[in-house]
Length: 298
Image (cartoon, rainbow, N blue to C red; front, side, top):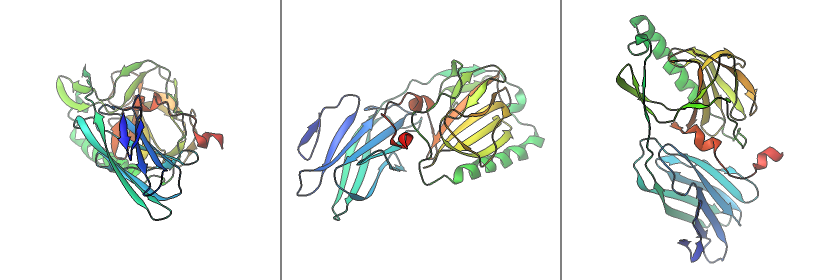
């Protein structure tokens, strides 16, 4: 059981606390999903209020919580947990200011568990391990382009729940895998690989706005979509593009086709989710069970 202000809530798959307004019986219920998240997960923080609030904020693992409305008196935020996050007890802070000026701050403990990440051995063209001199300026230019695409995000929630699986193929690469290219440890795999044949459709994971469409050295033909509140999805190794920069897309809309461009061993989709500057496991979004989205009913 978790207790705050004398009220108790059973802790099952959702951990709960209560913040009570001074001198009143009512307050705010704060919960998070999952109760014990793993490295690389996205934590969902839920706040339920029975009083009008003038501000709501918080912080978890060095990132501010960006809350969005989730029905009457309900607010939610995503919090990214890095793949290399220290495991164990981590502080979750929620701060509320009511319309009457009352301020409350809750500091609770979220236990982060270790994830047993895989290791993979891949053989690729040596030019993707040691790029030739004539390609180095291209790579630097593309890195600047990507930083610029990530530098501006809509200040409102564009995405809708539930999230859509972007390709039908089986999973061939897990998030967070330590990757050895041609026998050398080069990187972690910061996305989810889904198998497919050239020309198979790729679907937008949710509503958003296309911010980058480009053929990149490592990622091949790639599409970047902004979903608001510093949340982006990326789609790599495409064969064809079916969107342009500035397009507004809907969940499940075709944005391109599966290919084998860039640093690959065969045709597939690399799907990535970037949240407040950190890549998190796309499957933690695809497997979410957070109830009906009030935005979807509009």
